[in-house]
Length: 249
Image 1 (cartoon, helix red, strand yellow):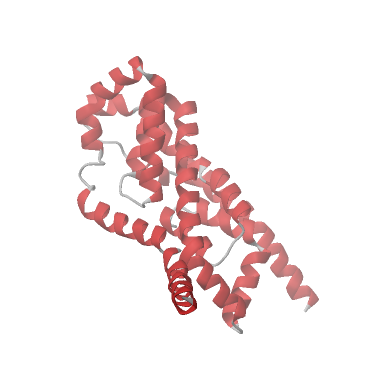
Image 2 (cartoon, helix red, strand yellow):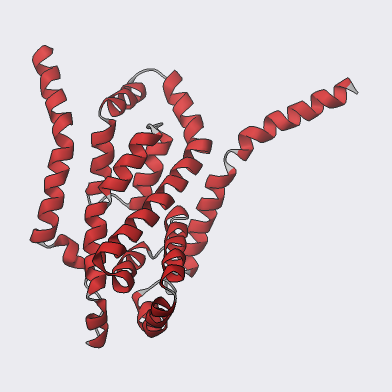
């Protein structure tokens, strides 16, 4: 009897570490499947084809559509599915600039936090422990990150070339503080959300002309300029610490 209990404890002890990786494994599998199957479904052409239905449903049941939109957007982000840009533009198309931006930021933040927690609970926990017990360059990099955590996380959100899923996963894998991740996510995605929502506000006229929305607007000087300015402000504390360190050396 005692031996059976010991075997059960051993099995449970082996299962628990493996179970921590299940959420991230599910996300990875969904992302791969979604990449190959949902690219054509979550598109501007799909939105063009169903825009009248969506507008009619919004006018008849605004709250229901808002909740459905937020829920779908959360799933897109949490499972790293294609269509996040389309969803952001749709938010502006259906709900206007103010509410559209609010819904986009809320949904993207919830989805980002979900994938962060899934990664941190499993693989991130293992990597963070290994980095903590390691010596040399890797541990120095982690220490430097924690000293400038908020600035680095803001930069990852603000710099347009950093993929959104990378900015969700990487912080979890190196053990950043959850509060800092959540705060910089919510605030850091606001500029990009405003741009995409703004594009969506005029989407009806674009469809009426038989055109597709031009997402290259993000790279226009009047748009990218302020975002880059925010990047400089986020990087400023890091530069100041670096300069002080050199003077004290």
